[in-house]
Image (cartoon, rainbow, N blue to C red; front, side):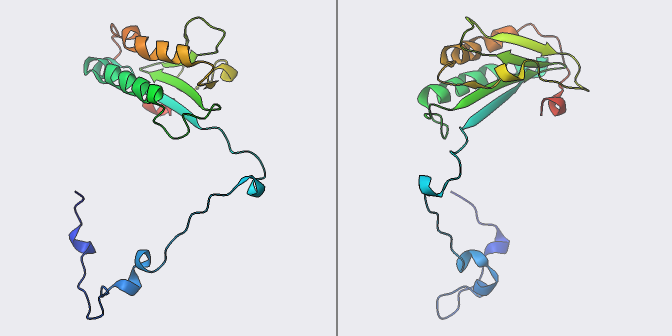
Length: 168
């Protein structure tokens, strides 16, 4: 059920149209979407890219948010439920933050995810920027490993602060 706000109601005239029909473009100006084939493209479309950022401060971890978010995202990735997730070019990256920023190297040649910590939230830089955004198919096992273990990485955190703005 979607509630309609009171301001949106209007009386109906004898011809069956709303009295404000001419004032509302959504009633008279429709849209049409066309699926453009490759002939209309100058370059191939960009791969679908997802960046997940998690607050791992003590209040966030204690609330159970981190474990729930990780398990939810894991199930979405396994089900390929996000738009473009089934595309073999799909890319993902993960950031966690408390008073510090944590970036994750998920290159497929690694045996487990590698966490890189940036303690300077005033002057943020990307450590190894070429390794942070990875192809989901190539690094699938590392991504699942990270999502399974991330709540355990921060279970004993004492940091109450969150550098949300720096993470953005």
